[in-house]
Every structure is written in structure tokens, then in C-alpha cells.
Length: 235
Ligand SMILES: [Zn+2]
Image (cartoon, rainbow, N blue to C red; front, side, top):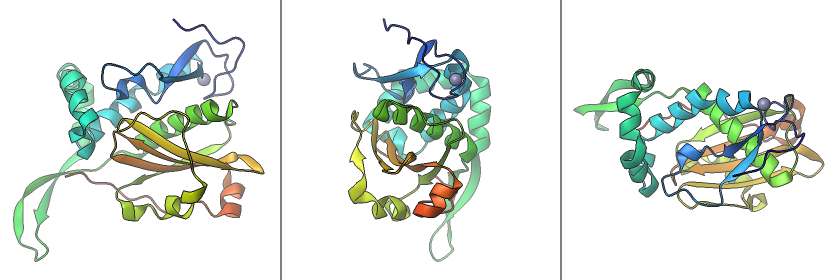
């Protein structure tokens, strides 16, 4: 049992008093047995519950990508995803909407087979990533981001998309906690602009996001605005 945080404000909204602990990243993203060193941050009940549907969507959709055949992904399929889909019609419908039939063609334009493509709801992904970043920021720096601080994220579909992180590679520190092939992250902040930080986070060894925090003037000054985000697809 964890003790309740005393008089802390919620690290997500910065407005309401924290009455619970929220797991960063969500506990449901880890296969059983859960590691003993999961990170929690002070949260209000509203924020603790507010992102549940988005987190479920993030998790359930990305498990159809190569993350689903990672070691952690296979365990998660066995342990909970099959059951989640069976029980949750709303989730099935939301995920089904993400899929669209696409024709897979050879480079010569010859039709090869029907394949599944995924058009992801990037706004929902962005919300989940932003919450994780706010939690990790608090965990690393023992201070919350302001609720007015923006968190912008970009899904990196391949190594070649990683031009921004590579530019800052030698400045990124390793997160204080890592759960190899389940959740790993690197980060840093700009010295004289403490709310301006950058994050490279990886879920299940496969799904990589680059995220930055700050406000418009910080981004412009430091030229760390993420390039336009692409619509990722999964085979
Ligand atoms: Zn809150």
C-alpha cells in the first residue's frame, strides 16, 4: 500500500489536490508479473481516470503493429488483449475504425495481396504521450510542468524519421528507471528554460515517440519543433 500524497497538487492539471497515485507509464502497458519499481506520481481522481479510454486505444491499436510480436507484446496478447477485445465492444469498434483495407503492391505496381493498413488516431496518441511525459518530468525533476506548458509529440515510424532526436543525441540522458523492451526513455531539458525539455520514449521496444515541452517562444528559440507528423501504418 502506498501512502497518500500530502497537500500536493495533481502533476497533470496542477489545479486539484492529488488524492491518488497514477502510474507512469500506465500499469496496463506492462505484462505480468509487474516489475516492483514502477513509477507513480501524485494525481487527482479526475486526471487519474480521464485518459483511460485513450490509453486503452493506444495499447490495443499498437498491439497490431510490430510491438504486438515483441516479447512483451506476445505476453500482453496472451495475458489480456484477447480478453479485452472479447469483452469490450466499444474498443473493438474504435480499433476497427482505425483499420482500412489497403492494396499492397510491388514496386512495379503489380497487385500482390490485400493487406491491412492502420490509420491511427494521432490526437489520442498525443494525449497519452503527453500524460506520460508530464508524469516522467515530475518524476525526474521533482517539479511539475505548468498546465500551460505544451507537450508536442511525434510518432517516429522508422529510424530515418529520427532526425530531431539524432541532432540532440549526445545531450539526452538515460531515464532514472528503464524497463528494457517494455518502456525506455531518454530526456533532457534546456538549462535556462527548465520547462523546455525533450524526450525520446519507446514502448515495447518498438514504438518510438519524440516529444518536446515548452511554449511557442521556447520552441522557436531553440529550433526543436518536431517536424510534421506522418500518418503511421502498420503491416
Ligand atoms: Zn488533475
